[in-house]
Length: 126
Picture (cartoon, rainbow, N blue to C red):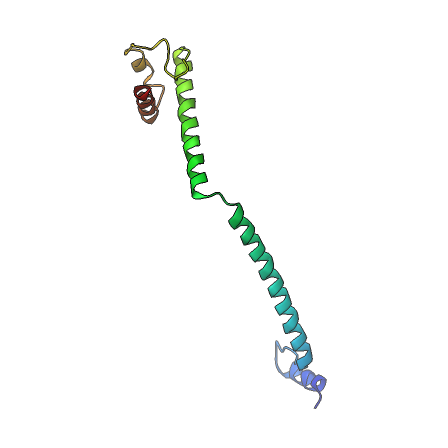
């Protein structure tokens, strides 16, 4: 019995029947699938290698984190000085508030507790 005849007979008897194919056709399909898989695998390896070599090192990430925190603290201090209406010296301390204690308390309701803590720590350090 030929393959075509057998396929026709099974197609009539079995619902959802998948036709039989010659071994050569199956080998060609398997070889094509293998080539596609290897091509995609190599593409993915190249993408991963590029990501691996371009990602920042731990030290670079730490440096960037420190710079971000420092910039945020400086911006907070500039905002506080702008609200208080006092220009700053090169060191970041307010000229108008040198030696004055009472001015800081009048702006406590404007800044959050964390911001007030950062401002007081920064002013104490300078």
